[in-house]
Image (cartoon, rainbow, N blue to C red; front, side):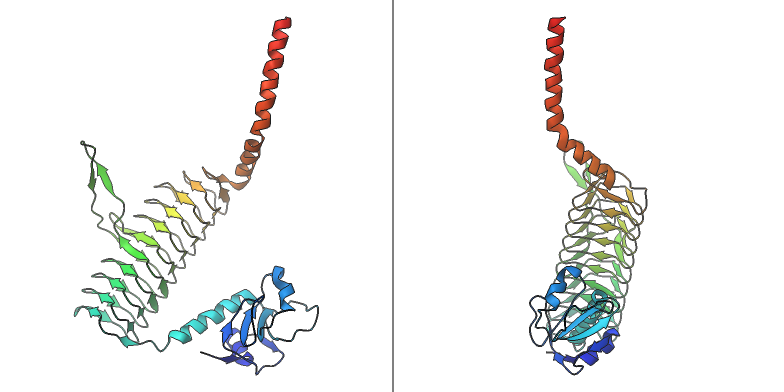
Length: 348
C-alpha cells in the first residue's frame, strides 16, 4: 500500500495545507463514508454537510470555501478540488503500475515485432507480425494485437483488449478490458435471392493521442479508408462506433451510444447515454445530445442542445412534449365541440 503525507500530496497538486502536514493516508474514500487514514475531497456544494462530519484524515477542498465550523481533518486547499483529485488519482495509478516491466511467460511475440523501451507484456498476450510498439507501453493478459498494428508511447491495453490488423494507435491512450478495435464494419449487400453478400472491410481504425476507450466498446474498421477517433476523445463503456465514423477532438460519449456508419461527429460534442444516430450524417462542433436522443438528420447548428426522437433542439422538443401531454384534454374538447356542432345542426 502506498502512503503519503498531507505535505507530499499538497506538492503533487500544488495545494496549501491547513492542519497537520505530517498526517499520512494510504487509501481514498467518499466524503460521507471515509475513515481515519483515508483521503477524500469536496467539490459539489450538495455534499458540504459531510465535510463537518467526515472521519477522513485529509480533505481536498476549494480554496474559496469558507468553513462554517472548525474541522478535525487536515485540509488541502486548491483552486479546483475536483480537478486536483483527478490529478492525484492519475499520479497514484501511475505509481502503482510503474514497476510493471518485462515480458511474462507464456506469451507470444512475433520475431518481426518491434517493442520500445520500458515495456510490459503480461502472460497470455499475443503480438503479431510486424507490430510496432513505442515506449512505456503496458499490455495486460489476454490482449491480442494483430499484424501490422502501430502503437505509440505511454499506451495501456487492459486485459482482453483485441486490436485487429493494420490499426494505428497514437500516444497516451488507455483502452479498457474487452474493447475491440478494428473488427469488421457491418457491410452486407442484398442479392436477388434475398440473401446478403458480405462486403470486405479493407480499411482500419486510427486512434489519435490522449484517447480513452471504455470496457466492451467496439470500434469497427472502415470499409475503405479509416474509422478515426481524434485526439482527446473519451469513450465510455459499451459504445458502438461503426465503419468510417469520425469522432472529433475532445468529444465525450457516454455508455450505450451507437454511431452508425459514416457519421461525422464534430469537436467538443457531448453525447448522453443510449443516444444514437442514423448513418451518413454530421453533428456540428460543441453540440450537446441528451440521453436516449435519436438523431435522424444532420445537426448543423454548433453549440446547440438537442433531445428526443427524432432529435430536435431542446426548446422545440420541450414544447412538443407539452403539447403531447395536453393531447387527452384536446381530444376531450374536440369531442365536446363535435357534440355541440351536431346539436346546433339539428336545431337548425
